[in-house]
Image (cartoon, rainbow, N blue to C red; front, top):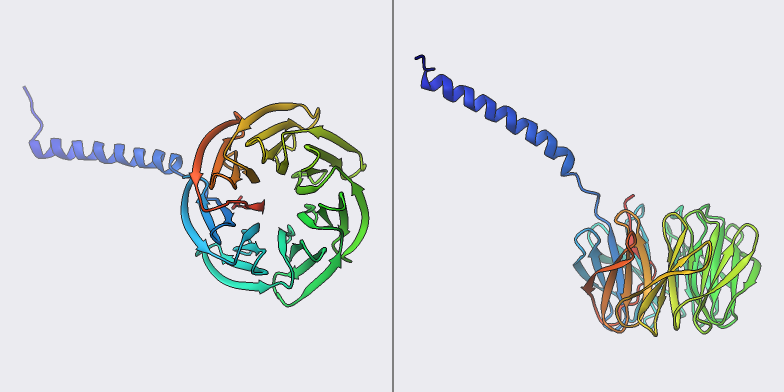
Length: 332
């Protein structure tokens, strides 16, 4: 019987092992690629901080001290910045999202609440709650500020995808002001329900949702035709977010600790999801297909799987989490 010499046999085995390892590595190099991390910036009004959540791991990766009583959030991947409105210290805190460090602030002689960044990243819009005005701040030169009086107690802000229109919810005058961003002038006012607070705009820009706190309703407005439909949601609704395909609207209900999931076409409630206590701000990570809800009363964030509309997990944050605005920093 013939036997291969031991050293040749070992060499043969090593070659097979090497080939198998290379093939395995090639397979793993494809399968191990993960989506780039997105982050949720959650304002904690009670302890003057921002919790930063990695939306892949659903873990708080940083806690950042900001101004006094932070409420509003606006983020920009292109600018690598998160802007935070601090009502009591009357300033906008600026966070470098690469380092998650506070790097600057913009003083505001008033009470900044709602924030929004234009899709072209050139302008930061600020709703001044007490002075009934909107500020348009040049993101390249913070001293360059335009101003417009809009309505009583402006709160939620949204900018159209083409940068042309700014929508403002005026809580105490019960309307949505539509602003031409080029001239910073009011083009029209849309009457809505009582005490509109949160606003949402669809990804296509064709729909705007006004969340009417005192009516327990949402008005969905067709931005092209001006047609408006009103739908009942939960008790004391606050904020809303559209799904990526514009077919579903998620609405936080602060006084029954839930999120209403609406079919946008019919206005019918698809389901109601129990979350934490006093849910306020909501944003959706389209990459992960998860909705994040800041719970003011339970000091945490609820995470909903938007594919199944089921609660996935709860993340401990800071005291009185609000996250009013679009707070998901996406790298898509």
